[in-house]
Length: 135
Image 1 (cartoon, rainbow, N blue to C red):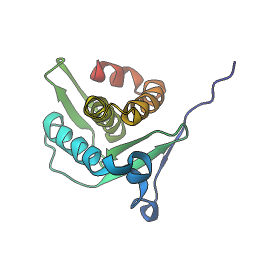
Image 2: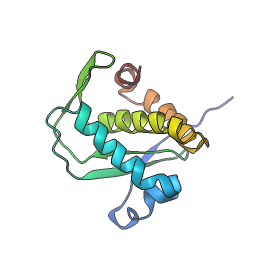
Image 3: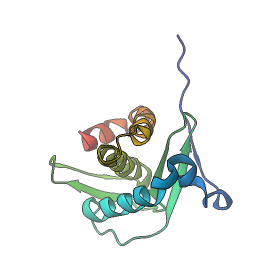
Image 4: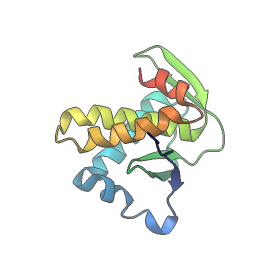
């Protein structure tokens, strides 16, 4: 049995407009806003900013701040904190969002997107950090 490696690709500026609606349909605005809300809760010194969109070869996606500096993430709910790059924190925030909103919208789309991203995230370079963050 062979398993294909899941890859990510940053979305070009020209393709951003319809990216989230293609993945999430009518839930795109709520999901995006929820990621920003969670960033405000969990990211130390978060003040907004520009976010990049990433598409996964397995049909998943995530969004992450366009931030070169390392980001401090603190989750008091599970006593986890770390300092990591924007992509890692973006995956965590997107996973949290998809998980939490999947209970509000049990049709399955958000749960499916959660599992697609989790498959990629846990296999990534910082998979151990991500696993601890979402535990």
